[in-house]
Amino acid sequence: MDLTIVGCSGSYPGPESAASCYLAVADGFRLLLDVGNGSLGALQRHADLAGIDAVCLTHLHADHCLDMCSYHVVRTYHPAGPFPPIPVYGPDGTADRLAMAAGPDAGRAMTESFDFVTLKPGTFGIGPFTVTVDHMRHPVETFGFRLEHGGRTITYSGDTGPAESLVGLAAGADVLLCEASFAPGPGLPPDLHLTARQAGEHAARAGVGRLVLTHLVPWNAGDDAAGEAAAAYRGPLSLAEPGMVL
Ligand SMILES: [Zn+2]
Ligand SMILES: [Zn+2]
Image: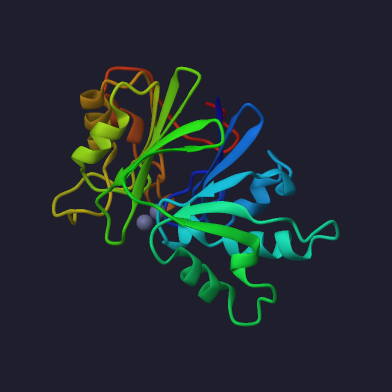
């Protein structure tokens, strides 16, 4: 499987990247992980918007889901459309939240563009992928994702504070795509985000083959996130960049 970084800016779009969006492809099946603000533009560099087969949303913060409103417009009003509904896996309340964000005048209902599926911790299939999800530690219900295909595994943290469930989801993964939002410092709030060093600690404990730091927040630009993570994780380590393919 390939996973393309469509957008990786943390908490809001940055000058060089949209907010969170990742495109996983296997056997020609295209699965989007998060559709944060700004990502629908960047996505068109990597995929035909009519060719997405399924969407997974880790949680309902704007930087992970808001461009679903624009994607609803594409699927409804494209000259070749309307396109048939595709499955959207998300936390409880996803359909209502997205419909509210789109507004009452959005025309065709969100539920005609998308078949919403409420996530619960566990393992299931999406196209050719074996997907395992578990709760992360964040102020709203948030899921981390483990994607397996062809003997390879990629785990994506979504947004989370330190979490045993993330270590479990990432156990033995080839790649851990892990958020590293916080700059190091005292008094960081619990159950919100990870520092780069904490991302490294989770990667080391899970024994992953490679760590890719993502969701770095533009207001921390210039921090040595890679150096911080390397203090805890000795394996291959990189920072996510738009267009990077894992
Ligand atoms: Zn976020
Ligand atoms: Zn969040």
